[in-house]
Length: 87
Image (cartoon, rainbow, N blue to C red; front, side, top):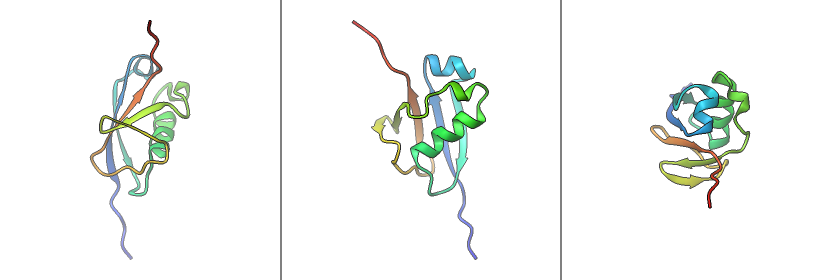
């Protein structure tokens, strides 16, 4: 029986998202089969005020936009990007 080692993901939260949860960084340890959606769900459950984060935010993995179904690998950086307004 082999057990797979969890992967470690560095998470960054920007602007309003960081304000809501009280931090701009978090580290997650997830199963090796984890996706972006799994990481967002974990952040929403684990961080104080995390339920205020959207279930499907705009995200980037290693500075490239990503879909919720994208698999994550050990050492990835996941960024939650709030909507931008401008003119």
